[in-house]
Length: 104
View: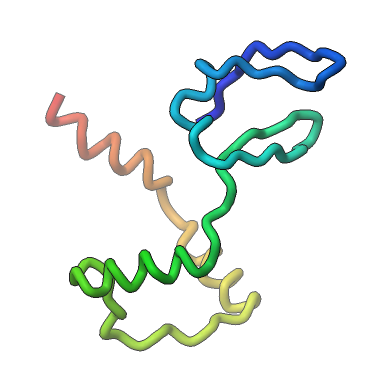
């Protein structure tokens, strides 16, 4: 979600109204340059915090390891062949629209 904010450029730097940041101003923020724009976002969560969150989720039974085997990697050639094979027929969006026409 992108939001455009009116800012002021002064000799002190870029001034952003606190109200425009909502509750983000209480968190640590980072400014990142991206293709002719500046993105202001919360700092990344450190890895140790992320692992603590995962441990808490596992303890609560919300996060678990899947009980199926990891699929074997597919070569780019096989992937291209499958993509070509599965691209036959109607686009999925058209199939969904056709199924929903009788409900309208």
